[in-house]
Length: 219
Image (cartoon, rainbow, N blue to C red):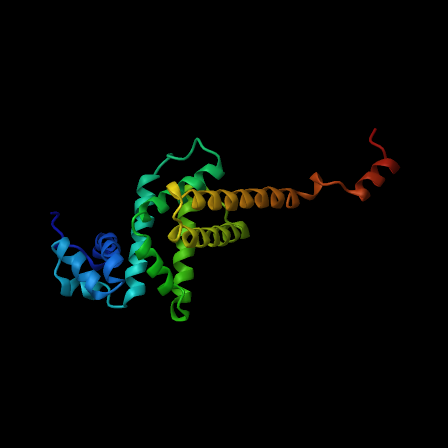
């Protein structure tokens, strides 16, 4: 067992979150799940309880952060550089779903907690952070309004995919993969259409420019 005696509270949250998710399948996102995970990792349950003093949403937030961290480690550097954007996004989302496999009950309970009105703001921030991490790893360098629209759209796609995944009983989660593929295709079509609309004005047909050339032809 690793020595976890010198962990900061932030580090402890990341270490314990996956084990708490496992325990949450049976105990829900509760102090009992935190205690079980702490004992598994040789951490004082009282200290673990302090790390998650904000309740279930804090535990879930740590779980999301642990998945973000694992994804960033798995796809660091140029791991996705030789793939088209569509495939990069698909692989990143699929990686996250793979980390949830076997924890569907914990996910269902987490989604119910995240949907509570008092948790709406934090849930939106969590979704945004995960979408931002995915786009960053996919190589997106946009700094204008595209930065925000891409992340907002992907956060929505990911949230919808999680809802499908949590209840998907098909072989190999085929329904989830079909749903995800369809949604990503829609985003790619949207991005292409947006790019055409936002091309510099001199790349678009201009009646004024045509009439000017007819009246004053180039010599």
